[in-house]
Length: 47
Length: 166
Image 1 (cartoon, each protein chain N blue to C red):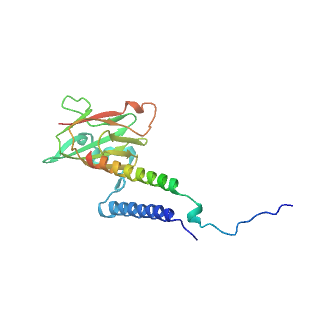
Image 2: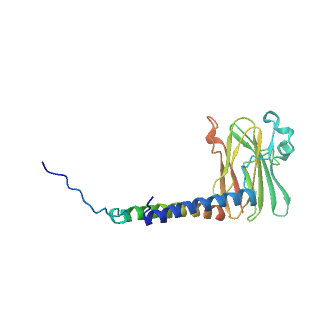
Image 3: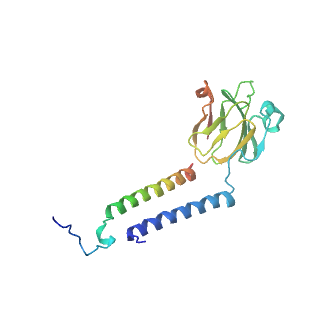
């Protein structure tokens, strides 16, 4: 019977999870929301 | 609990925007007096003529001071009553000079209507039993269509008028 191999070294979450793509998407969404708000405010002021 | 540094960045961004937007709402409500347009006065919807603003002779456009106007309107299915002109014809167009301050006062005799001067900031709900008011500075020249933007019945699309800023 083959024994299950278990790694003794636990990678830190910083290394194991790459959140770069998520970060970019979150920031794009944030910029969209903020610009939509300022767009509506600009419309209110200009009319 | 471990937080990834990117998570810290977007959580800070999210919470900061929440706080900023709440502050803006508070500023608008308590310092600038932003409120629903129908918050001040109630009226008997079956007898709107009893109110000074909605007596037939007071409907439509009146100049109250230099560059200041008021427009009184009674909305009903399916018409905006802006009063009558010299020839006893129903007024459908309001003409004001550019830069004038116009106070729109409107109520409904029957159901909920809308009052939007498309292309300006004038946009209110008109509820029976309430008087809605909105004061606007007509900054831009042009012809602006008044539309009912609350579905009020079969003739909803026939409720319109015009504001002409010259």
